[in-house]
Image 1: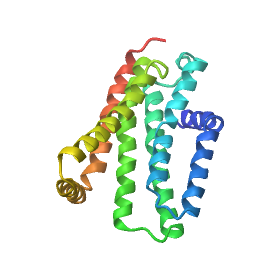
Image 2 (image 1 turned 60 degrees about the horizontal axis):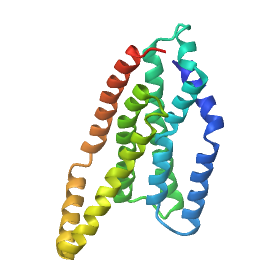
Image 3 (image 1 turned 90 degrees about the horizontal axis):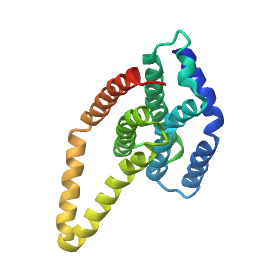
Length: 215
């Protein structure tokens, strides 16, 4: 399994230069504009969450799966490697940003840390949904579904806000927002736990798919 992780890291070393450059440029822009790190962390988390999809796509194009079956490497190890990286990338990015926020962006507050953890959990939720699709359909065939998983909730939330702004008073919207914030703060520790459970369930589904898959 260690060899599989090294192989994926070598693949991503060549494939992830542009996404990493985008994250670095956005960090510099955020720093010099004295902006908070919300948008930067959100964008970076999504990029690091889907990096493993890039490695999976490379495996498909290169015929790696067929070749790996000739080696003493179990099918489960192939799945475990992708899930381990899909968790480590956004987690390491979160730790990096917490340190950056503390020392370069006027200190780290509890609320900011909670928001950054929430964004990371959303990235984990997303990868837990898309990895089984990628193993089942392949990265190319599942690309549209991956995009829909991102855009459909975003469009739905935007549409709700626009409709609510015309039918619900600003006081009611503020009250709803406050209630949601209080609920989030009260059950904050529950959210990472749910994210980890979802990722483990997704792992079991993907493992079953990969075990039955023919190459």
